[in-house]
Image 1: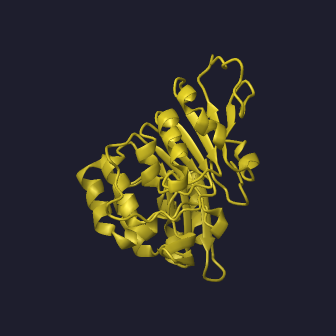
Image 2: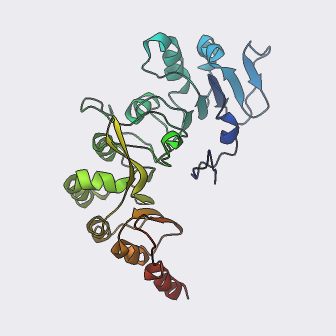
Image 3: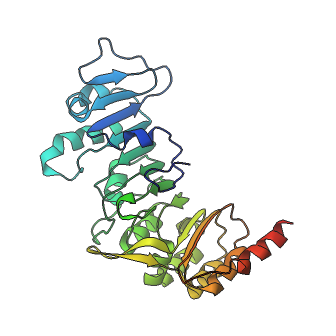
Length: 298
């Protein structure tokens, strides 16, 4: 469990905390047994486990790097892939890292859809301290079915320990990412905007349903428009009923609510092993749910 500026996420990478203040750094992890080229090129640093490069060295060395297999890549403080001033860097990313299965982008500046179209084989996409609101236009689409299973991230800069994804992005993930198991996003916001597509997609084909392992219902921050970030959206009783009726069984549950009725429904999520609850309507009687949960566990 990593705190990353006071925000708790399961990034499973103790080195991330040390990278937050770095800029224009690329870290590549090769397969076991990789033999470092001799002599080591300027701007390269090899510690026996990972290859660390400046962005400039990565960009200028892409023709050499592309001959090796790097399953894991981390980009820290690098420019957007869409930036016209850094198209050489974008080309290097596509040539060297297009086959990576795990990609971490610290201080990400790109749309998730753009990243998935670039990293076509990535199974785990990690976006700590993401600084891009994920609001797509209808033409921003995944170009093909994608094998991604996990999309993790946060927006600590505005106090959100999840990504701010709009409904266009989410429905694009539903349509193209059949293996998706986990997304750090405010689910109730999407359900309130587009409840029918979510439920219908799940009933027509379970593979198209949104992730079931990690449910964030209500948020410390949420998106109203691209220019308007609100404080404390909260899940209501109706939305929780809708989720329960779809027979989802999340193992991780975050709830921000102002409703005693929502608190009382928490024990209905019987498979939850990781729970975070915030009540924003005065003093909450958590005995509404925890007395039931203690009886269940006993």
